[in-house]
Image 1 (cartoon, rainbow, N blue to C red):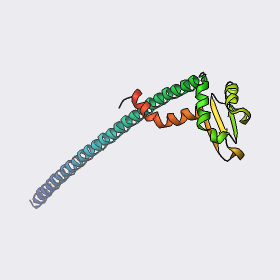
Image 2: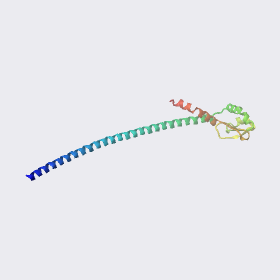
Image 3: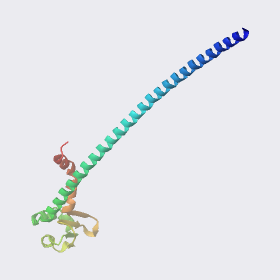
Image 4: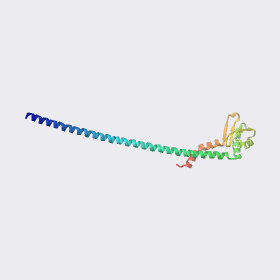
Length: 179
């Protein structure tokens, strides 16, 4: 009987230990599941945030690329317009314009030198006489150099166009591509 009591007591203690171990195991499993679930939710949130950042960055890159392409296209068109203006000026055969340029700056060239392109040489020489110093590479207009080279006026059509172009480029762009 004593042995049976000891065995019964041992079985009870053993069952209590097993039950306690099962409860502990369930508690640990529940805790692990909760941690795993929380970690999963956190990782899912981080993944969604990273995906959103990548989407925003890709969109920003695409917008910048689109703007770059538009600006490059606009610049090409403006360059074509400028080149066409230079071509039109090179075809300009207006001796009166040359005379007006020379008359307006006669105080400078009277004691200096005047240069022009070969096409306009006769017209310029007709106005400035012995002050004509030779030809230069330009589409038209003149370069006037004061005596001793102290002052040089570049009145070539390209230079005049560049000055007007630089001053008016915004207006030209807005006329072509209103905001």
